[in-house]
Length: 283
Image 1 (spheres, helix red, strand yellow):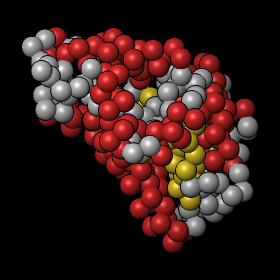
Image 2 (cartoon, rainbow, N blue to C red; image 1 turned 180 degrees about the horizontal axis):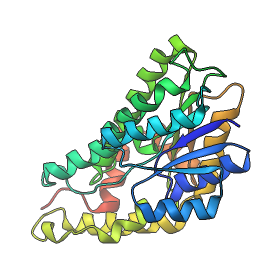
Image 3 (tube, rainbow, N blue to C red; image 1 turned 45 degrees about the vertical axis):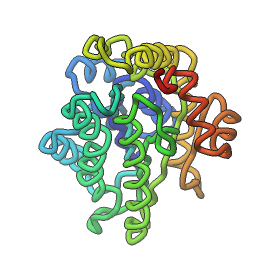
Image 4 (cartoon, helix red, strand yellow; image 1 turned 30 degrees about the vertical axis):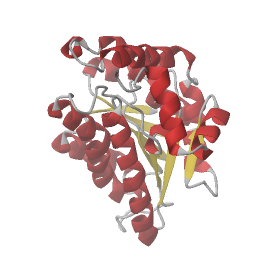
């Protein structure tokens, strides 16, 4: 039985990916941060799901998880690593606490680096293991190719993941290990549903407050109107198993809109977004 590691498996895309891989006959090692989630997922998914308890920013805990997986593999290679865990931080770049920007990058960028370094050898870099070479799937976003105002931390993190993935893909050619990007648009996941928890009272005297209120409302809508996580999970599963995967998969509920904005002049798109969010010049 081939095995895949999925980070951020407790909800959303990670949960749906674990479910999809189990249905395809894989054993899944899913990372979670809470013991209660580990127990819940073990109960939901059965014996072929093994929880790994770690935060992706905790290098020691991630390395311990990799050791646990290595022991379970018993000399076999890992079929796949899905770097999915992530958060979304919002706020105006000029006023956002640097600690919040750093937290965003720690989870969404440094975390995948830590995880990839820990589990990468199990994909076949370690020549002592036997079996087919594995693959890495990086969960990016349409925000990895564009920048949304008041979401600069999140967009920056996804731009970084795109660059990291492309560099890593070319490095891993040495070992015949592929790296594939999956870039969803709006998805029905808790990452957006938590937008109502964002405290914008800090910005009560900020000129950005009206736009922040609009962007928070928009983020909450994404958790209701976006694509089902299962749709993204299907693409991830295919990326891990198809004979000739694409370098990058982009999945959005409104592909025509993204196509139009990709061909329009940047200044035109700027004006459209500014008008929608109320970011046109004051006075």
